[in-house]
Structures are given as structure tokens and as C-alpha cells.
Image 1 (cartoon, rainbow, N blue to C red):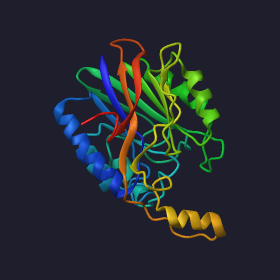
Image 2 (cartoon, one colour; image 1 turned 180 degrees about the horizontal axis):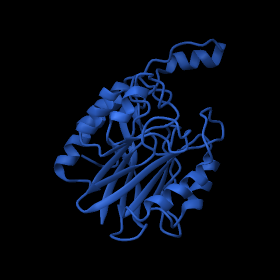
Image 3 (tube, one colour; image 1 turned 90 degrees about the horizontal axis):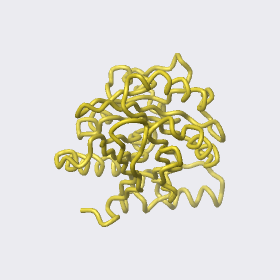
Image 4 (cartoon, rainbow, N blue to C red; image 1 turned 90 degrees about the vertical axis):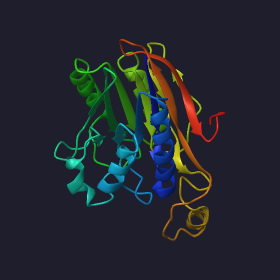
Length: 264
């Protein structure tokens, strides 16, 4: 059996500080076999840098994923190919830098991880997430024990359809991007763990991680302005997965919030 923690979008310095602090503790305690996290908003709420990614990996995160903000920090275009343990969305154009998948190995368990971007209400140029997933699953299945698939998308209908499409073919499908944790974590009939959105690892006294007042003012007057990252009520959100010893099957999945859920 493998126990995996998957954390939703890390937002800004408040989010990454808490992630680094707690993941280091949990890894030292042996609480999880793997820790995966989305880091596309880790640099001041938009994008990521090589330095930040290395800090998160050094803290004990095994694999980092990205989304539609992956190139917001232009310097990262030159850094991503040098980084182990991080992959960009697999359905970006083939010429994009970075890995389109991860294969993580620990305790004689090999874990395949990849992300696809949704196409409804998303601005990034991307190919079909369903067909991209078909290709990567075919390529990864002979090489790994389990496959985890992140769908970074705006539309809940697209994420849910994607989960049903992959049911029984991968160990887990989980959504990111909206920064709001959903209450639908479950194991689908053919054995795939699913949740529509992991939520945000960052400041929850906010609007999706940003200070509330500038966002409210933008809604009131329509004038563009800066949205600084908020600071208050920092929480980690995601899921805890338990996977069977063989086959693409999840034994259980449950929503994860720290602090909360009666955890230390």
C-alpha cells in the first residue's frame, strides 16, 4: 500500500512557508510515501522560479506540478529544464520547455504523475486533455505501479467528465486551478480516486489568495489594480490517498485541511 499527500495550488510566500515547514515534519515522521503539490502560484501568487521550486523539493516534496501560470516568471523558461521533480502541463505545445511527466520512485514503488490543462474558459494554448491523457497512460503504464493525473481546469463539468473518462485506468484524478476545495472526494466505481478541486495551500482570509479589498474594488469600479497576496488564515488543502499494492486502484481518498480535520 502507498500513502500519498497531494496538495493544492501553493499561493505566495505564506503558502510555501507553511508547506515547507509541515511537509518537512511529516516526511521526517514517515507519514507519507509521496508528497505531490502544484506550485504554479508559489512566486508572489503568479508563476514560480527555480529557486522557489528547489526550496519546495528540498523540504521533502517529491513532485511539483504546474498549470496555466507556469510561464508567468519569464526566467523560469530558462530554468525548468534544469530542475528534477517538476513537470509542466502535458498538453502544452510540444516545443514548450520542461518535462511533460514525472516518474517518482521510493520504497520500491514507482509513481507516474502528469497534468493536463482544461480548455473551457482557459486562455492557454493546449491540445485535447482527454487524448493527451490517453497517450501518456499508454506510455506510463508499463513503467510505473500507479498513475496520478491532475486536471488543471476552470469548468467543473470538464473535470468531472475527465474523471469518469479515466475511471479504472489510473489511480487518481484530481482537479486544481479554482483554489476552492470541493466536497466530492470519492472512489469512482472502477477504482479511481477523484476530487474536482484540491483547494489552495495559502492564505484563506482572502479572495483566492489575494487581499480582499483590491478585489472587491475591482468588482465595484472595473478599474485594473494590483492584487497583493494576502497573509491571514494560512491553510494547506489537498487530499490523502491510499493506493492498493497492485493495479490502478485506490483504497481510499479523503479531503485534507491543515490546520483542521483534528490533525496535529
